Length: 425
Ligand code: GDP
Ligand code: IMO
Ligand code: MG
Image 1: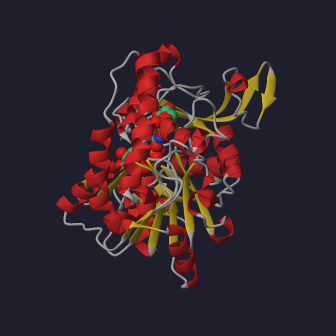
Image 2: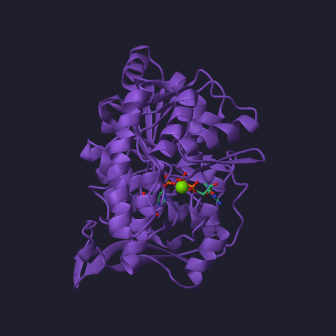
């Protein structure tokens, strides 16, 4: 079976944990989009890994890990990650493959991201400052793009970098009044990246198609979430890639028809980092309660996450966009202790009822959430292993989510550990 795991909200739904669990029965795990803006947490025993570029299956030995074409790779972050997991005795030798067509995030991308955000003041997007937008912009622009395969020809890369950095420096100095950067420094870094990464760089599309022919089981790991998708999310408060499952085929060269099941990951509530409309946001004691109980602080940036109720209008949109078959609902444990729990079933926009999520932010910022309120539960559920052992109000809450999204909730998270997971058929 080939699975694709994708976020149904604005990211941080718990994809890392779900991918880690499903990877137990996979041969290959594939990161197909985004970059080090992602922060996927995997908890193995007493060890906690925050993965930004390595697929979440990488912490299991023997699984092959692919970083494919549409991922933007920051080599510094990847080196750090490989070192961190090596310290825990996990080696990627012979089982990491990086697409020669994946684009490289370099220092000038991160600087451009930061300078642009600073210049926007209160209108900033609230990016992770990982250089994601500028790198994807260079990819689309083509002439200033550097791909992992370019590390194979350093002389050619040196000339290319000189031209790119000349251009970038004009922008940095003239527009942002910032200091220029050195092309030589960036080239020296690229030489060291070539030393490390050349053995891993390959044609991942060919590898994946060969693996499909051999009957291998592939797990595709989405980054970010559907509502952060560049074309289908809440633009401009999105990331710069197709982070819904629609980005999977283009991101790795494997058509969606090879995926047996699309699994959408959502939290039992909603969170968002960065700016942009969020109709069910609870900027109050409820939001604070969820933030503290759920440790809702960014894996990549440490920023406090904005918290709110489960938004079924948004989640149902993501289910449709993503051809989602089943839902993994995480952090059910976090809601324990609330007297009442709410689900947004529709929006009122200028007095009109809307059940289809408007990705247009002009409209979305006018949306007032209309809730169904259910009774909460007091019990600690972090050790529950069987759906029938959950408090009846928690069971009812899950059933309500199934009803409003039209999809079965087959995986339920009751804590960050692998063992804190309930499976339902
Ligand atoms: P991702 O980006 O979708 O992989 O999610 P993150 O790793 O950024 O954020 C999810 C956070 O929730 C991490 O700290 C996980 O360890 C934690 N987590 C995942 N599932 C659960 C769950 O069911 N309950 C609790 N309490 N924590 C969870
Ligand atoms: P994972 O994979 C949550 C958000 C940023 C910002 C917007 C644009 O861990 O779920 P970018 O740096 O991509 O240009 O920022 O997107 N964002 C995420 N939010 N989880 C993520 O990844 C995110 N990746 C980007 O906060 O609002
Ligand atoms: Mg995350």
